Image (cartoon, rainbow over all chains, first blue to last red):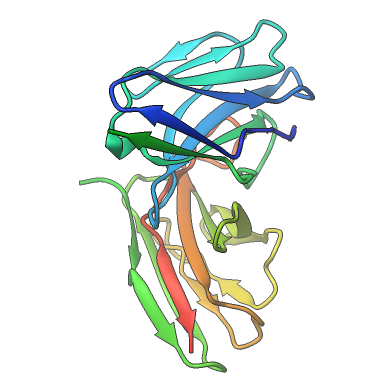
Length: 111
Length: 114
């Protein structure tokens, strides 16, 4: 599975949109982009995933560039409860087993 | 109420003792996984099982053992052979083990070896 690069940390004001970048320049055509988040001392929570089209659900939007080498997770109206580590993961459709979790981005939402 | 449960939330063990962590799911998922997380680190895969009575080693299986006798249960035993067992242990499940299947995680068990 391709490697991802995320900034180690970022701050966001409550009520504003949080835009979390992820670089996956070596992504292959059969690899999906997944986003999870982990609130301190809890299990990771699935947020969203996509292959090449932009995706939206009740939690977030995922914007994937046309060349698929990077993506952005958007939390439209950040709340204090969105403070967490956010993980961007790429995973091949023919992959079995693990999700490769890196260090992620520590997002702190401030009042 | 569907989901994945792990028990206990906190576990203390004396050095040299084996300990078993519980993981149960009622999502009717075929695949289940165990990960380990150390402070400030990402998750590392210990074992996974794609179907009942079958399981495979992950990246850090040494010192651990698992069983998958029932679809809904995937217990992890941390043996005395595991040199540094203090960590946060996470169980996950997915509909299958295929790359397009999303994994859903339990709340975790924090193991401390005294």
